[in-house]
Length: 194
Image 1 (spheres, rainbow, N blue to C red):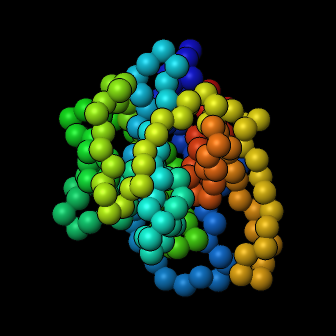
Image 2: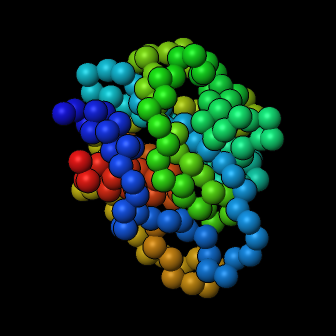
């Protein structure tokens, strides 16, 4: 079974203990805002994942590497529709180009979003265009590298007066960390059940 086939098969399994639930600070109040991201897997011999670099002037998660995505709007039929809409807005990925595989485990961010990763396959080398007000650039990173536990480092640092642990994946001079890295760690853990 290829790594992409294992990932796809793992989505059919029920959640088990050991997944990262989120990085929301303890005691934070309020219902989380529903959100979705598209984990777009390129259909090539060595598949990759399409990632964005958020602009430095955004209110939240400025400058961070992320999957295309955002909040679920009232007009979205479901979370997958939100992920597809956001991917089209942020990188010009037409929904018809995405073969949906399924949803992974929700992750609650420090900014109180409950993010559902939607996994799907896309043709390689699509002519994608970053949204000028949201995305500074986009790139493709190897799926096998991102999902290799040896490349997923747990880092402890002080944040708002508390010690926090987060995950980081360093690839090709890029720092993939926080919620994006945690969702990749969860996909790795899910694949281990196959």
